[in-house]
Amino acid sequence: MQVISTHEAESNLTHFLVSVEAGEEFVIARGLKPVARLVPFVAKPVGVRPKVGELASPPFDVSAALAPMTPEELKRWGL
Image (tube, rainbow, N blue to C red; front, side):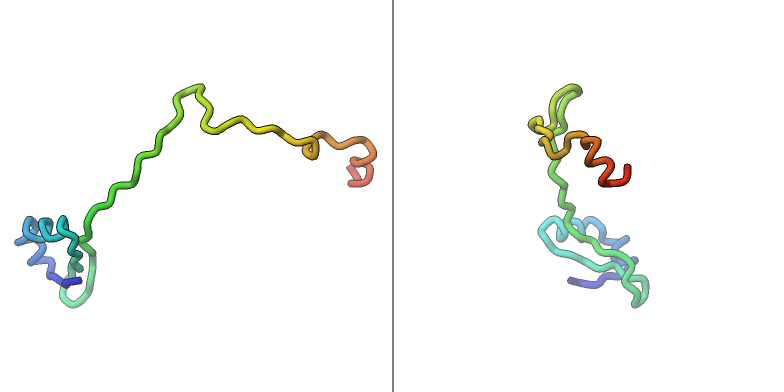
């Protein structure tokens, strides 16, 4: 990764962008302090959103284990 000054980045931005498109990366420094990285842009894949009213996933079945507690179970839990 090559370090370039802010002045170089301003003066030759088009040149550096061509290099970045080819896969190179640059660190832009102000004096000796690195302040930014110039790297290729990687787009995030666009997910398919469901339409209004359309299911996003298949329906699921609530098991009997999640059914309401019986009065005896409620007493055991102090409820």
